[in-house]
Image 1 (cartoon, rainbow, N blue to C red):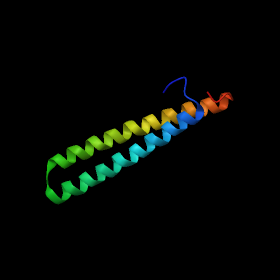
Image 2 (tube, rainbow, N blue to C red):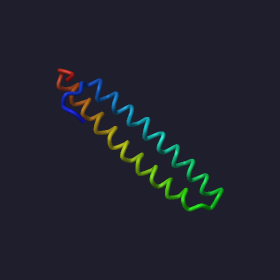
Image 3 (cartoon, rainbow, N blue to C red):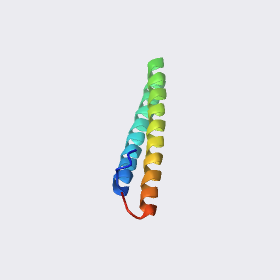
Image 4 (cartoon, rainbow, N blue to C red):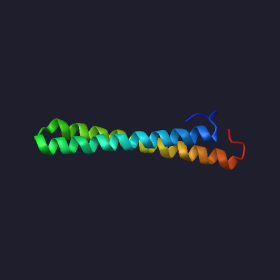
Length: 78
């Protein structure tokens, strides 16, 4: 987060982080299916890694959204 971003910039970054979170969760699900079909523990580790990345992106999205909301409530938009 940067103090010089506008409300719209923060909200756009929040949306981007949510998209990345969704992609991470989809990859994790794919690894879980592959692990169940192949009994390869590597897939379980990859699924866990993707779930962790999803949580990071979720945290980023919430932080960017909160900053954008704060900027909007300040009334100046920047």
